[in-house]
Length: 266
Image 1 (cartoon, rainbow, N blue to C red):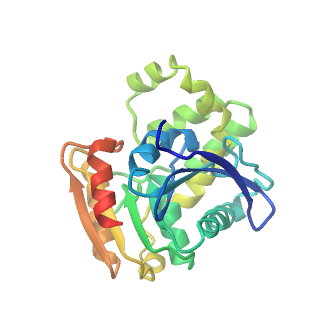
Image 2: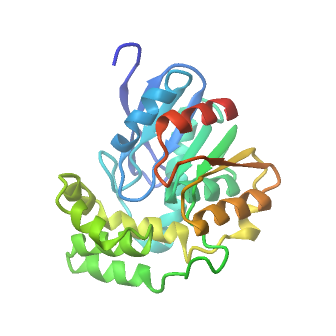
């Protein structure tokens, strides 16, 4: 698009894995971290809009798009994803602003708690469960592992959608007819990383309470109660956080609504 600079880049993570990323716009750096079943292309619209104010970095988390995936051992999945984000943030040339969505928000919070330098952090609906408005799903990681090992990638995607973001079965059936379904199946193995990052979906209070960077905790005003309650609990936990609910929005907020809030915070 006219007025935007787009350059494809790669950086090596601590374990040698190649991480692909793009830069959009001009100004102070913002790193965007996507959630499950998405690669950097999913954030292009957001990056272009936000790129009117900042230099925005979108990257392929390991195992997705143009990024590598040198080590799929689950015990180290969270550590490696934090190292990937740290490598991308370092490429920004100084502590960047960071925005994480869904399980990507959980990743950014874990990274901040681990000391990855950030100027400010905005998170949108990290999928924690903090009360009885939602039951914790049981054995999702083991069931996903079995399905992916058996080559049943489509079934793995369906399982995750049903028990993670709780997409209705009729919606999942329609999603299977969309051309993007094949791209989700192609990166189904990365669901193991997302589930490892989120864990049992309980809010890791002790770990996250260490975060001192300013945090903007965002949720959609029309999102389910459990998601809104989780973001409120997160904001109350963190020592330097502010809670904002976006009227009329759900888990996928409109750029027109989200971007002005991010611009004001950053």
